[in-house]
Length: 362
Image (cartoon, rainbow, N blue to C red; front, top):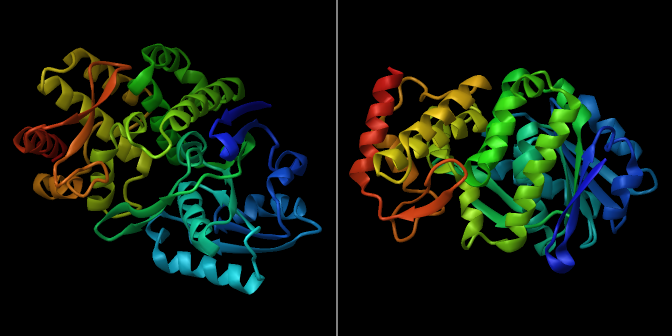
């Protein structure tokens, strides 16, 4: 069992990483302060793991809500459903919402928890690799709009993050690989040595070796926990965690939610950001190609999906939450492990890159 702490003063919380953490309620029951609990899950995860959590809630007044699986279900309609169940439960201000599932469940559940009575406790129980290393940590919550991903949301920190690595055994390979994109991101933005470690342990990670996985997850959580502790509200350093995401969110939205997985879009987005950095003379082109080789080693896409339009992708990017006064701010790099927030990049440079990428995908 590994523990990583997110240091936010009185709002600090632990991240527990290990095998069997869902089943051991003694690990996570202390995070529940009241007597009302709602467990939110989806149709894929609930049949596998919901009973383990409900067993640990004996003695409390609890309910569960199971949503359809998929990014396209991260909507206001489903937030309304969650709030309705909380109302039916009689949930008071000391209630807890447990988000049992991937990033969609965590984001939507956390947003609903932030809204109910202006904020109740919630506990993240991520069951996908992507959620374990990224969305479950840091308190970003939200829902999608047709015009863009995560455009509505709130910062609302969980009381605890419970990572049960045994749940990865049931994760489809495509989703598992997509999660590895976010692991690679941490090396890309801040630790080139970790990129080397990933290259050396690629076979073990692809085989879901427990020791390698524990180390990769713990490293990712430690890195993100440190950034969140220094910049909770994304006023500076935390924005670097979005390396590849401005491109990636545009790809996800334009392709249609669910057609491209978040991690797949981020993989392509990171490479686009690296190549744009090279085009602008900020970083060596060889670093971008080494990133492409690592992404290929992990079976991740390095090209756009076919059929996308460069102009429409650019328009999606202008809705990115990091933009100020309609001006795009991008996370670029000076080479592997050296990300930075860049403003003032000419639209023409971004469009030229997108047009080249679209042509390469056709």
